Image 1: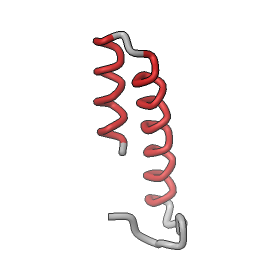
Image 2: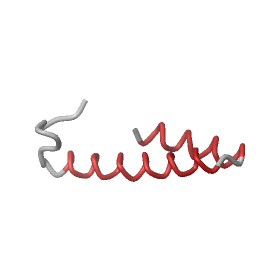
Image 3: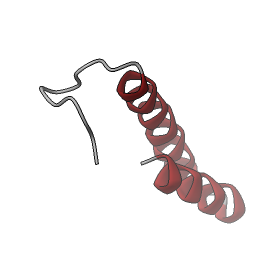
Image 4: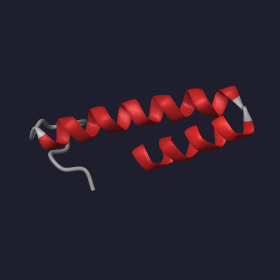
Length: 51
């Protein structure tokens, strides 16, 4: 999710498309939150591991 967010950020920045920029930021933030929760051992969405 983080990688997709970064790709959308780059495309949005280079093509000057605001919606891709916004979606990219949202995906990066959500991906970082899920990664941090996963590292902390907290169950996310009823799962203890995300693959």
